Image (cartoon, rainbow, N blue to C red; front, side, top):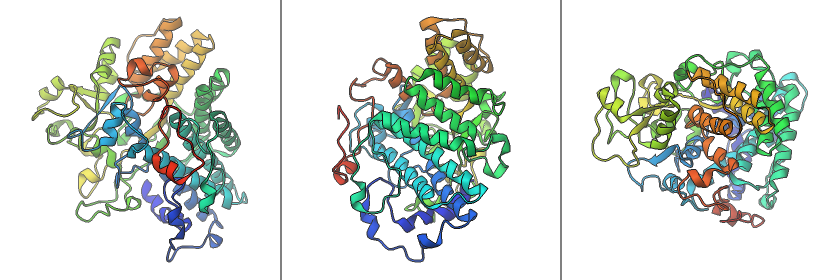
Length: 506
């Protein structure tokens, strides 16, 4: 689906901005042959192109220089995954995150900051230049506000206090913006989402070609998450129940298919980052220096089991990759403790099962703790034409219905509505073929904690869940309270924007 976005990525070059908030050097570079801003943003087609450029930031993984993916780095920060790879020196940014030794100069930290501010910039371009003069443009403006809220929610969750930018920045001096308190960032997030909701469609009203777009369900989901993160539990539960009671979403019957191509935009999908497998990339001729020309999910290949150590399993449709983001033994133990073989067998594979399926292990795989990852796995059937390993079209599932049910369960528990909390929790447990939880009090909260890990492993939520619950220090080795709750502001941003002050603890 991302092949539809190609025409618009170059559009943002007419503003000549880099992917980070303050790379002002690019402002002086002319763009030959570009459409002038005065001639753009006129038609519905222009509006569609402009908003597509903002959606592109949901899937912009920086493989062309740092191999940084927001989904992957968030998993590696947690206790559920190991950085792994061929050795400790291949991707030192990931390895540092794995061991909580990352610093302001970490390339993955800079990428997470940069991709979110680039998304915000593209949303601001839409909001500053498109007039609400047709039904489609009104919807596009709503999508831009919802997307901007998505990017800011990522920033405030992982960086804490950040600069608020709500207009298009063009001059170097405009980048000198100080950080705002978290409360102000959340206020903007809530305001954007509430303003967007009336003009967003329901999922059922979308055409097949528009399934990647923001919906009312996605906006309510983000609004509920933002409110929960602020301890606004009643308001959060209200937002989550807008999704639950909408009748637009339900839990897919087969969990093992949720993360495969045949499960894209399924019953429980609320928002996805969409990729294409139609590019037909070939390694020798691929434009490695310009990610704008790629539409595939290269991080599926990056995080498959390392071919130097692990053989493929052709009869299981399972291929080799480049070895990062391996499961932790702790994750497997939590599945085993809960008796959850259903999701475990869809998420990870034990060494015993791998060898029984005909696999072989060579040497001593770095970061390997006895398990391989199946969720977002390197499946032969997921590959496209060309050099197969370069053409995975697997979508990131960014918001899922089961996540919302579990957040609603937590919000209800916080409010003392334990019956409702168990009801939402047990819907997810039952799909996983587990018996109802009859627990209460702290035991019910612990059930919610473990259920979120088993259901959402490798989807990027575990680290911040542990942080907001106050459980990170006891679960993540090397985690320092008062420091690692947030990532540091990238050193390059501090160098360019003198108004920025480093986060406490760094």
